[in-house]
Length: 422
Image (cartoon, rainbow, N blue to C red; front, side, top):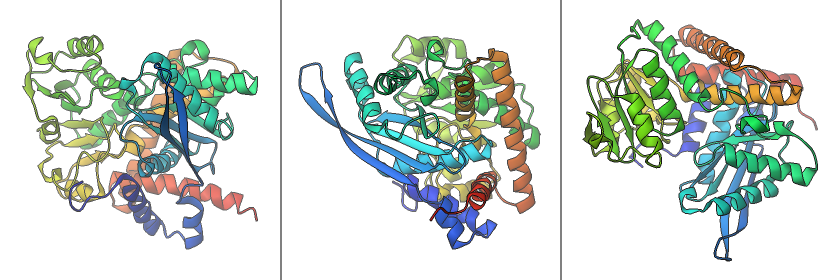
């Protein structure tokens, strides 16, 4: 970790403290809304294909149920750790409040590289995870969703495990499911759509013409690839895309449909893409962060823009599609350079917003057409952007701090109304 930068949870707590000081929260108010309410760590014994039993460390953190049931994804990744999960749960609480949906914040994770598991082993791990944590799961208590390394199939295994144990049909226990099990239309691209809608608004307030605006996207997984497609279709010029294999650049604009097709047939990797279409491959994947573009979309993992490279960032707008891609010390450099940052807890909130809409549909037993879902999503995201931008103007502060002011204020007001059960 670069000198002067901090881990994800310290980052999250520093962000909270900055906003709490501006809001003038009392010590009692901070106690009610800052720290996670429940942290669970378990060892999951999983039967492998060779007959052996392998232990996996797993977490579920419920940060807050103050405004509604816990809400947050489950991450299967080899670098998962408790501080990361705690930070992500905190950000989910604030994110739900920023877009003003009646949900709380939670997050889960398993230390595993899912690429090393067979389909059967992945199913065994997924079912064991739900079986171990289901006492806290439920439509009105804690609702998991996909995250890095998980997908609708994993959510289907979660749902089925819960249904078999509880002997109930309860699709609202999990979101991000296949449509056939009560998943919502529009869910796969929801996070990227939220990115698109907030980028449009950022361009509007920054007086940047969308037609031909240049975009660089770091990360080409679900969010990054959908963001590339949507921005390309919206008339923007995608001049760089990148993943772990490198950065692929074409100043005249990358053939985004070709990139999507290539990644789909190459295990979601862009490796070798330079041999298919006209792009230059830059081996250093992090070089994409320093490109001179209108919009930079970090859509990978945490702590990508740090104190060591922030002064080299030349993008006019940073749209944080990933969670926590920018450290607090980097924020200071970006602010000094006049970079307009659409913070993660606003920019990537499209996913949790459509998850909420899926949860609503599940509880009604009535399902909407995709047009209505996307219309609801756009209305929510645009309104949230405007509220955060207005708050930034009112307090003369950054969009990130403004988003925390909006979110923490909403959580605090509910906590005040509810009081403390003694």
